[in-house]
Length: 335
Image 1 (cartoon, one colour):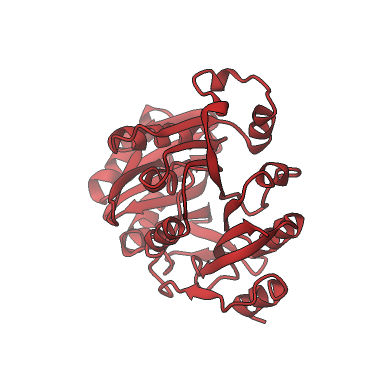
Image 2 (cartoon, rainbow, N blue to C red):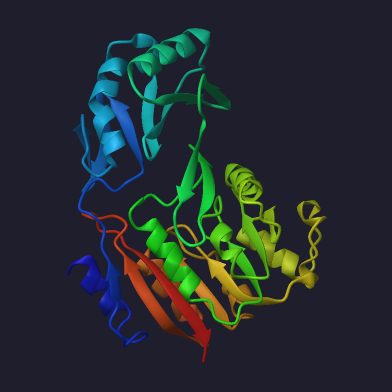
């Protein structure tokens, strides 16, 4: 059973309509990729086994084009390859960040070697080891999202960012189309603002939460760049947010009064593990839930806990073409 039929079977009792599927190109679609490094090759796990690569066809062309020449530069320089264990790529248009991650402290000699690679290849090299970051050039990316209204987003090598450059704008457009009679929005797992920023033009106010420091930092930068004044945010885990809604005092919320919001919708975009235990307690207070899921199994698990809701609309996004993974966006409303 392929992943599309599996999802249809999983949701057969919950959603009787045809599931709209948004397809991705078969290759050249990933704007970020993570690889291991061993014995002079990129590595990844496929079907439970480690495979060795010198190229990969799923990333966008900007990343594909530099994978082999970068590997050559790494392999000929012991300052670069010694105790290197991971190589991460991110690209926006033709601007590329390459993060090299080590089991050793980095020093000025390493930085000079990294600069030599930057002089030969069109990339920006970041070095990371435990509690250490070295870079001589860019450490962040600016993305211009050309939909109506258009806006800017920012990311670095540690923030969550939707990996499929082809499908992300379609996902944003769908979420916007699901909003009816908006007042204020509560958003959990907001990342660096993929949905927060565009939804600020739809809702009166947004309160967005995220537990990752870097993501919150770049959300703040995106808010400033786009001259937005109706987004409020805090670095809170989902459990901390639940406690805050029950009245627990957090210093991180000293500039936010949750009682001033008039929430009409809640949006959640959790990791593959789905919602944390008991978080459905928050969701049950809302008439409208927008659930963005990268794991249909945990979506189904969480949906079974939300017994007072039905799926009004659901679309699938094949963000990870040629893999077993699917992304879905669902609007849940109270029965």
